[in-house]
Length: 268
Image (cartoon, rainbow, N blue to C red; front, side, top):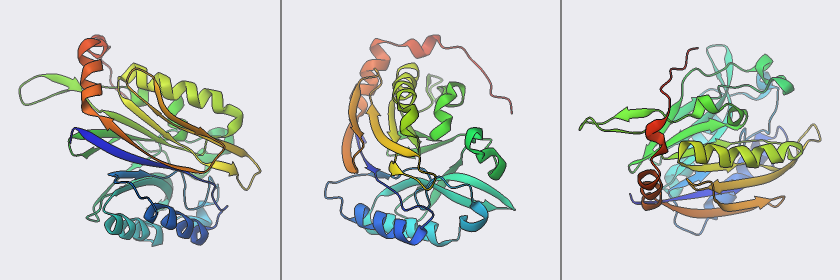
């Protein structure tokens, strides 16, 4: 696929009300009129950024995962976003990447937000997840991960012809990032795009959460040069954008900075 169509949903969320959120988001997803390949929802889209996983976490056979499976099939899309998951007596903030055929991948948030006590309630993921869509490679990340550039840093991969190429093409952050630190959010999204020479999608919520913390959204799409292709603040919004491989190739071929990058290994 030379072109990939991705839809971002920037929305308010009903605090710790799964039923209301799934109903609301279902209507929004089914109401998307444009053709799209991928629909992205915010972090913890079924509850808001809650520290009560004992009350609201589900298994991978639970209602929300099944809701994602049915919606992805009905709309013929890939549906992505994070929810609370319980697995082997540990809770995770898990980004689920649901395909229309019912198969899925997932990524567990690596960097738990200690300022809000997330590290006291959730386990930390230990591996990156890079999804594939029609030849596009997409690195899945969650909110606070944005502050830690090593975790998202491009690594070179060797292909069958022994050529080395960047590991991924698109970097996605789903978030509940508060308005009080929106400057960091916007700056770091652009930085991640520039340093990794990839498209970057940052999908955030709007409105107050149950702790009266306001979120301004600032959902953004950034190109591999760091240019902002789309941004929306404060409003609920559903936006579909088409990204093109030609742009990616042009940047990486004319400015092959990735070839000069330092090699490294992430050690747990």
